[in-house]
Length: 350
Ligand code: ATP
Image (cartoon, rainbow, N blue to C red; front, side, top):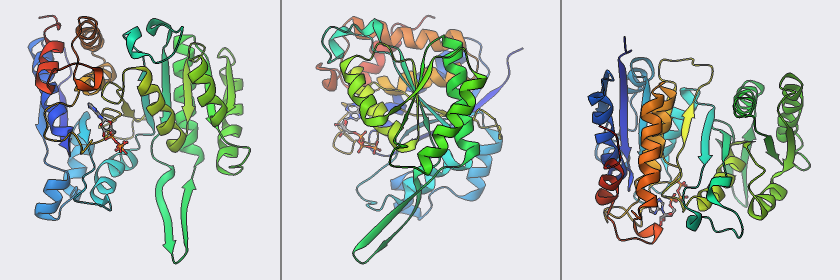
């Protein structure tokens, strides 16, 4: 008997609504295959904030937390809210208060032509970044004073341990290596804690080839040859930078997916799928944004829900569409967002 799943859909800002609209038919498709699935579309984002003054009211947050199984999120960020306060109260709050510690960002390039590296084939690259999602310099604690500004980077043992355990477990499951990106040589306190916990866990996961690398050296090594890398663990800030570099190995920002999840499942809602890209205000309303990252993010959410066949079907539909030349402008093509969505869906099994 299939478990009834309830999802929340938050299209958000900029190109978010355009790419989310393209994956809604995926939910219909999963339902057509017998999955017991319902979803609700929520208005949270800059336009709603500017019209009502509301970002994410407490009762709405509690309902998301306790009465849904996951969230499909488009993007947040709007030039009309220059201090980004609605992004802080919406996306960063969901990540933090749902304790979505792990932000998993896979890099599995599909076309050789998308990989801007000499002598490396797409099929040879299979990297997953496990980025801590709730702390570090993105914990938004800091001050601006006259002639002085400070950002605090807070790292706590529970979150770092959860992230590293999940990263080690994935590397063990895949039989691949784990690399910790850090700068403990200068960030002695915060990254010192990361290194200590990494060394502790290395003993428990002795079958995983694991090493720490200074993040700057890691970036250099990734561009020279990404093939030896399997799972990369990093704090919020470094993980953000590394995964944007890896987006470039997949064809660009429009292609890269992500899933934020809570390995310890403190609440019913334990996952949020969103593309790696942001709201791309330069493209908003043009109908040309690439929905591929959103599709692959939905596939990650399906996998999280245990819908493995559906997750694989979506990933394979994306791969087939790209191999057959479907491309929006960012990939050198001429398809609109809607046409790209249709080109992917055409390869889904009935
Ligand atoms: P954030 O800080 O929220 O991650 P950002 O400032 O890094 O956002 P993005 O919104 O991710 O910026 O976009 C950077 C650029 O990448 C955009 O200006 C756009 O040109 C391109 N881009 C992003 N997403 C897409 C997409 N889905 N399709 C095509 N191009 C995209």
